[in-house]
Image 1: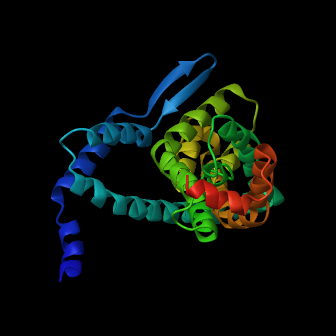
Image 2: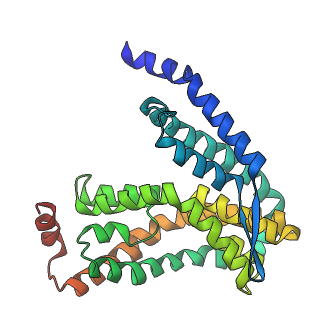
Length: 274
């Protein structure tokens, strides 16, 4: 009986809908905010403004725990609509995507850079087996599924990947939106190469990054949206294989080398009990 009532109660949460509407209206009225940094321009999109407002309201009595939990379902719904819009944009630009060719497929290897950079730093500051879940990639849904399946839900590796998932959900879009603006302003990269780099396997991060590129390169708007969407979709797909067969084994080898442990599986059990 209770299970049948839960969806009904969810759709009756008028307080949540009203807050969402107010946040969206305020964000649209305020943004985008452009300000100059040297020779370039950084654009703060309504998406980032809405995030800041919602994050701030979370710590006030305005948002109750009930609204916070119910809002999680809207993330999936809104991203589904965004994916549908991106899919409609990819079709007309299929010729441009085909011309790019292997670059879209090979860019996933760039995620290996997170291992080389992040793993030594994590170990240096005292992170243990959690670093294995943190380092290979940006910790999206595919990474969470693979790490959880391999090591178990209560393992330190899963704690690591889940911490990255939460951190990316909260701060990822903000970071990629601002970082893309910096790259557009201060580097000689072609706008289409930056659009491809926006597809990191997270729809919200991709939307923030590509959205920041459009004000800087308005003539390439359709191409930026199409390439970013295609890149993001391919990264989601190829990322699973790269993580399984390349990134995770490489992370384990480097972790063993840096910590001078001969048996990673055994040390996992020991760390789990610490």
